[in-house]
Length: 392
Image (cartoon, rainbow, N blue to C red; front, side):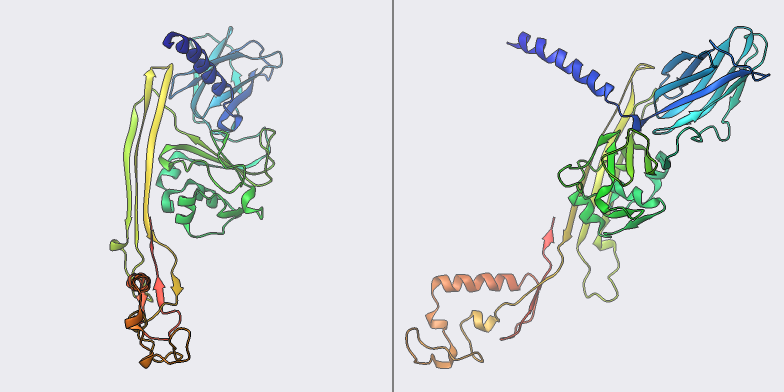
């Protein structure tokens, strides 16, 4: 039975891996393209192009076509080096090219006649990361910004509020964090539920509501955030609002990782000036992450876990409850009570001696509840109990 299971499970597992790789969305990848010419402006076909990822060592190769044009697509985000060789010309290299999510970099080369040992290297060309091939209006927020921005509640959807045209509609960030709500902002006048939130290009919202996140990804797991607000390219769709994609970190040839703990506690807060008490709030956000090589230049991994523990109070609610005198059976000051089935008044409106076991039990429930909040003990008072129960 075990052999039969393995024979079935292994191919399915491999198929799943291949299928998931093939579905790696365009929104999490980029491209580098350009034209190769000589010093006179004449095109150079058949030049060998090598694109290398400096973080993972991954290499992609291609050649220029008859028009001297080359393009390398489906590049994971990261820093790249582009090298070019052609017999009869000196080689050239560009370094410090940063590919962001859905990037369209244009990197042109001009080769000089010479020997293959006379290499020309250019580093960090100004303007090379500008997108001159597609017309979308987009904003990119990199790893450093995501990690260092003070995100209240550490909810990654707050990054969306950094772009022009974004308006926050719900300031209660803990309600958003615990409810995995994704509709606390409006961008450029679109409806709050019209944003398309994705993780590595995969849909990250409950499609039945368009307002709930599937996963509140930790800011420490995010490599880059790409927000496109208009003029989307063909791979974007489904909604009319902004396309909000986050790209998670991946492993490289270097080991990296860490442990996190963020804490908030009302004991460390000052009491609000117009409030008699401090609102109960204890929030712990902790976890870890680690990434590195399984096989150098070939296979990498990144993994992490995060927990959120929130203990706070609900919004205050006001109730009307009996006074302690009434709960003890004394209804003095209230409309005259009569013995059941008669018109004979009960002396002093006191029914203490007539209370049943069940009646006393019900009175004890009210007595217990009155101790849980701010209580005004007065017969005939209304809205005399304010409750702020804990909501862990």
